[in-house]
Image (cartoon, rainbow, N blue to C red; front, side, top):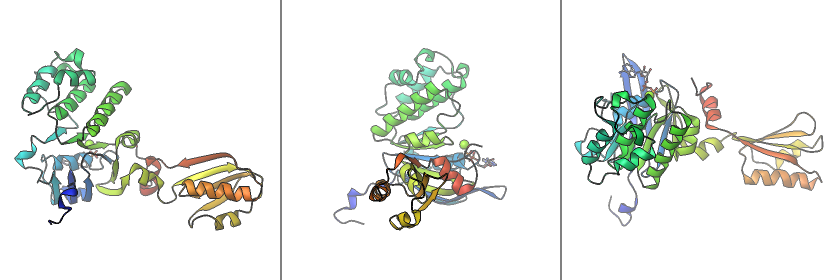
Length: 313
Ligand SMILES: Nc1ncnc2c1ncn2[C@@H]1O[C@H](COP(=O)(O)OP(=O)(O)O)[C@@H](O)[C@H]1O
Ligand SMILES: [Mg+2]
C-alpha cells in the first residue's frame, strides 16, 4: 500500500478467485480463478454446460456463489453502485415484451449520466428499421442485438456479454464484433462468454478456457496457441538429411521426422528463431528448404489437447 507507484497499477475490472457453485451437490463451477484486465476483452471460452453463464451471473449479482471471492470494479457483485457502472447482456433476453425497441433503448439511456446516442446505436446494430417494433415481435437475432444495445447504451465501464453472437447471421455477427471492438477502443472492459473459437480469437485480449466448471487454460490467444508443442514447420528438401544433427541445433523438445523421403516435419515452439535455425542448417549443407510452411495451433487444438474433446458439442 502507498508508495510512489501505488496509483500506477490499475485494478483489474473483474477478479474471480476460488469460485464455486453447486446444484444438487454437483459443482458446476469448480474452483474457478481468473481476472479481467481493465480496458481489455476477456473471453470465457468453453462448450455448452461448462459453467460460463453461471459464472457471469454470479459476477452480475444475479446468482450467489457457494464459495469464493468476486470483485467487480473492486466491489462485491451486489453492490448497488455497480448498477450504473456495469452493463449486462444476458444469454436470454429479459426485456419488457410490449415496449418498442427504440423506446426501450431511450428509456435505459435516460437513466445514464452520459449515454450513447440511442438512434446511432440502433443503426450500428442494424436495428434502425425496427425501432418502432414491439420487443416481442422482433426476431430472435434482433432481440439479441437490442439486448446488446441496452447493455452498452449507458456507457458502462464494464460489460458482461453472454454469448453475444449465438444464433446470429454472419452480417449481424460482424456488426456485433465491430461494436465490441469499438467498446474496447473506448476503454470499456468487456467480459464475454462464447463457445466460438473464431469469436475468441478475433476479439479477445485474454482467453480463459473453461470445461466442466474449471479453468483448463488461460492466457492471451498468442500465448495459448504458441506454448508447448505449439506448431509444426514443414518443408521439402533433398532426401535423407541428417535429422539427428539438425535436432542438436534446435531447442530441447523439438522433434524432426522425414516422411515420405524429402518431406520434413519439425514440431515444437515455432518461432522466428526456430525457422532461422532450420533454414541456416539446411543452407550449411547446400540444401534448399522448399515449400516452407508454418502451422500453428488454433484454440481448438489447444482445447482438444487439454480435454481430449472437441469444443463444438
Ligand atoms: N439453476 C440451475 N439449476 C440446476 N442446474 C443448473 C442451473 N443453472 C445451470 N445449471 C447446470 O450447470 C451447468 C453449467 O451451466 P451454464 O452455466 O449454463 O453453462 P454454459 O453457460 O457454459 O453453457 C449445466 O450442467 C447446467 O445444466
Ligand atoms: Mg451459457
